[in-house]
Length: 230
Image 1: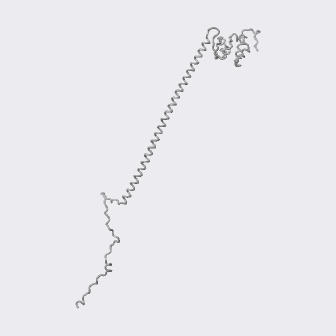
Image 2: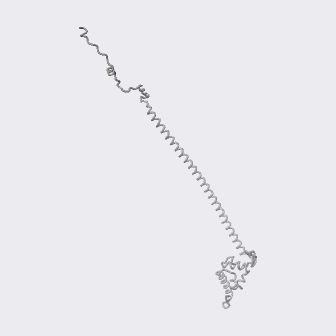
Image 3: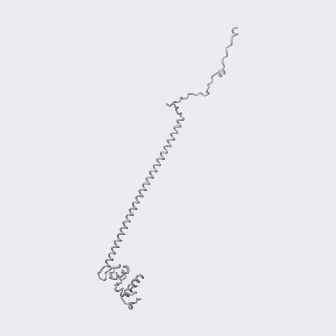
């Protein structure tokens, strides 16, 4: 009776039941290794991760490259400015040299011009002095002169003075002296044809002949007025 009233023992668990009863892990893919603990900075900030470190490295590299490029550009600009300044300095020196040469040439030209003016003035004074000396010479009624062709001619001082009083130059007087006329020959003996043969300009011939006629008319009476030769 005792065994009849005793409860039977529980059946052993089957394999399927055991599989069902096995505990299930809450994470389907558990980490094989736990993540490393994060390092704390001294001030409490979190240490940068590897990705952040890579980004920072790339930024630093880009910044360094930019700065290097800027330095190269700056050096190139400085070199260009120095070359330009040297070129400007050379041009300034060349301009200064040319200006000094021009000023020197102007000074030399002015000196030569001044010397020529002085020589001309001395020559004019010498000719004037010689003219006055020959005009006021009292070595008789005639003087000796040398023509441009080297021929020695006799110059009548009184004829020279008479022609000068008429306002005629030495070139006209030389025509008379080449033919060896004296003042007496002109005033007393010369005819109009003789005057024409001197090949003087027409106005000069008229002036001389008018003076000759006035001289001849002044020394004769009106009824004895000489006729003008043809």
